[in-house]
Image 1 (cartoon, rainbow, N blue to C red):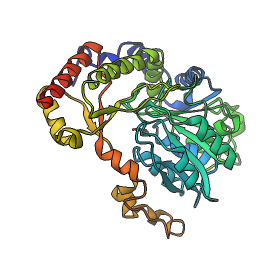
Image 2 (image 1 turned 135 degrees about the horizontal axis):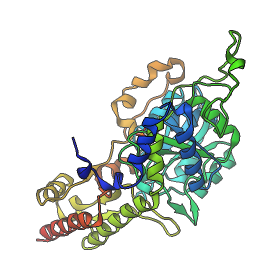
Image 3 (image 1 turned 180 degrees about the vertical axis):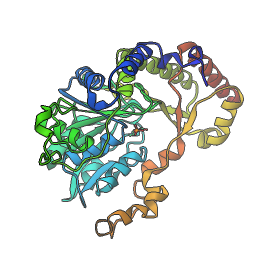
Image 4 (image 1 turned 90 degrees about the vertical axis):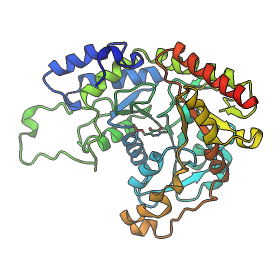
Length: 407
Ligand SMILES: Cc1ncc(COP(=O)(O)O)c(C=O)c1O
């Protein structure tokens, strides 16, 4: 077990311990007791320039609740990018809906709005737009497409916080925007998430979906404040929505709040780490960082790089990584398989949950060729270093590896 001295200071420097102690000493530890969770929701929404925040116990619960909140149900189609984690797909299946994959741009690795338009059908209910690695997709265009077709736009910003498009914050374009507080994220409390929205009705329904469907839940408030006399009544009816327990605990909220107080600092460390790596990569033509287009900012959850070394210097992905590790480098991660080639999807394991909906739904290789090609080449470089000195040491190792392969 780590001692406090060994803990990652980027996760630990602020008020986390102080707030946790206050929760421990409080009367109730549940999210329904409100205090910490409600403050987190208000402060997070304020930081994003939105009216409502609804805390959840993961960034997958948020996606599921968001889809159901905008009315996605059995047999509806949800368009999501072919280059992302599995959770956009699982959330869609859990809403009994059908994932439809749009291909990605080979430079930004983000969803291609032209392919989104192509994939829209009369069953499409929502677009799930992922900000991959901290870079928002073309959100103005996606908003336009969604409005034109009368469908919802949900932003999955699990990997992206404080990034902007033409000066507007990512998270302000969607009907709802989803964030994750899982342990690797910019802002973390181990496990958790939050939705933000400007819509009172979406906030209320999303909260009910995540809170057992209690009828008294409101957009801005996660606890039901009722005179005891009203519900000490055998005839009292409590639930008007089918919900789950997706609530974030007071412990999680307290830690997330402490992290929120230092959000700019946490994001800045990742951006600066990424910049150091990008600078070193200029020395070669086969490590091609994710393109951040003019007018966009990238919060660099991780630094996504297209590795072209196999073609350009005859060194395979695995050989390059092995050399970097051998010289003392760390944190080159491969990208997840495109979701529809994961066994759960490719072998139609999902179909049994709703046979009538999925009778004719199949997926196969070749569906999104750009994503399939880019996925094999992606290297995800770590950016969450404790400090820039450590990042710089790893950058020097990378520079040396590049020199090694120059011969
Ligand atoms: C793009 C994306 N969406 C959704 C999620 C799901 O978040 P969580 O792990 O909090 O459920 C993640 C986190 O890994 C993610 O990276």
